[in-house]
Amino acid sequence: MSVETGTTPEAGAEEREQQSLGTAAARNLTTTTKSAPQMQEISSRWLTRTLPWVDVPGGTYRVNRRLSYRVGDGRVTFVQTGAQVAVIPAELGELPLLRGFEDGTALQALAARFEQREYAPGQVIAAAGRQADHVYLIAHGKVEQVGSGPYGDEAVVGLLADGDTFGGRVLAGLDGAWEFTARAATATTVLALPHTAYLEVADRHADLRAHVELAGLDGHRETNAFGEAGIALSAGHAGEPDIPHTFVDYEPAPREYELSVAQTVLRVHTRVADLYSRPMDQTEQQLKLTVQVLRERQERELVNNRDFGLLHNADHGQRISTHAGPPTPDDLDELLAMRRDTTHLFAHPRAIAAFGRECNKRGLYFGSVEVGGHHLPAWRGVPLLPCGKIPVTGARTSSIIALRAGEQNQGVIGLLQTGLPDEKEPGLTVRFMGINEQAVASYLVTAYYSAAVLVPDALGILENVEVSRWG
Picture 1 (cartoon, rainbow, N blue to C red):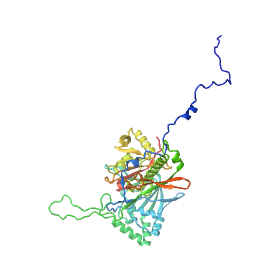
Picture 2 (cartoon, rainbow, N blue to C red):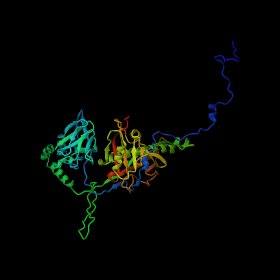
Picture 3 (cartoon, helix red, strand yellow):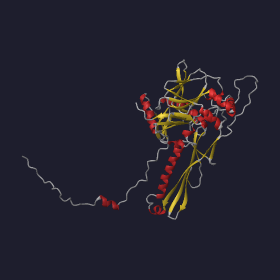
Picture 4 (cartoon, one colour):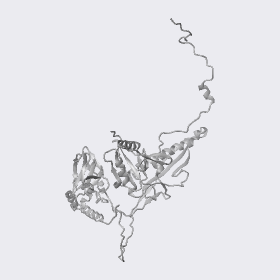
């Protein structure tokens, strides 16, 4: 039998008497170390950091280009009522031969003659070699353009998606055949216009027929591979032949980009600014965070603004869709192959992760490049930069942007104006607006910015990028 030594405090015994100054009281005699105000909204803003910024003293930047005859080939918009889909009449102006035609009555009559058709995956919509006698508008789904490979085998030479069209030049006459087979890759809804239906509408609208015939003649003008007006020249000749005369024609109505604006009024009570500005200046900290929010909005506008945002200003010929949904190495290779000297790729972080999963499946690895002292992932030597401003839709799809940056490189540039009154940063001003009767000081904070695409192939978009598919 063992005997325990020592004593155990009884329940409810008094606590020990405090022998030194407690930390709570001691803090009254100390000075705390503080951080500057923090916020989660601040992002890396790689797009803003990597775009070359061009000073625009006049507030407007005009992009002069060589005259181009390539028109139309755009995307049309539809309205849906239940399972029924109809094309918006004015959107028919995106067809190659209807660009610029504004007779709403004729377009409405033409839109009413489109027939809705449904195709299952694998079904042929138009067969190569058959007479081209329909105009097709893709309302929903993906359509593969199938041609012959170099050894006579079948090859997918293109992919069309929502809003794309083909057969638009059928309106000019029935003298051609389909150069490719159009085959539904997914469940697809199309609107089809038979040539006979067009003729019935054109017989009642002479202005429509005249416009299409004139546009058809313009389409046969000599152009280069990019649709620009040709320049006559002679090469490899001998003797004294007649040398052709030529000139370089310009677009008669070039695109102009006006600087956009983002503004807010910051208010700081003078008592706060006077009494509570040590060790940190309250007004300066308020301005610092406000400027950060304006810069975040600026980058969001550079991506999403319908007037100058990159997602809306990419030429339709520079837009492609993923072949299977998730972004694969093949998709990015095709995107890079559409332009020379691609300098940057931008994608939502979730799209980058989806691309990484596809690379992992194939045993491939990202490369890396150094950008501004940071080691970042790259594909084919082109930095793949995160941009959370690129939206992810409810269908869990996003886009990947590829661009060639720089004014001298005929690429994409950012626009701003420097030397503004009360300029705090390039293109950003902070103006004191006075103190009201409640002793509140006001500051007008303004940012001016825009972006310009100098030539169409400077900017490309990989669309319908699935970011949530696993396995």
